[in-house]
Length: 111
Image 1 (spheres, one colour):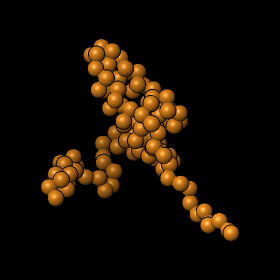
Image 2 (spheres, one colour):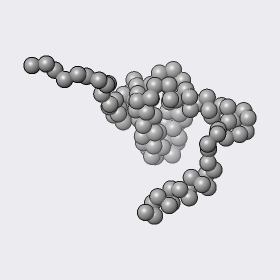
Image 3 (cartoon, rainbow, N blue to C red):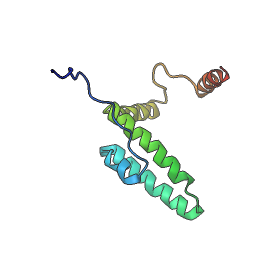
C-alpha cells in the first residue's frame, strides 16, 4: 500500500506562553527586540507589583513568533516598513487612517 503524497509543510504550531519557549522561536532582531521589551516590562512589573504587562508582552510575542514561523522574514519586512515610514513621514501605499480602521472594526462588530 502506497502512502499518500505529501505536498506541503504542516501548519506551524504556536509556541507556548513560556518566555523561554517564545525566545527559542525568535532569531536576530526579533530576539533583541523581545529581550529589550522583556527587560522594560519586568522592571515595570517589579515597580508596580503587577504582572499584566508581562502577560500582554508574552501574548504579543507568542503571536509574532508564530507569524514568523508561518511567514519567514515577515518581522524584518514589517520593521523595514516602519523605518521607511518614520524616515519619510508617509504611510505605505494602500494604508488607511486610524479613524478608518476603527470605523471598519466597529462596522464589523455591529454585524
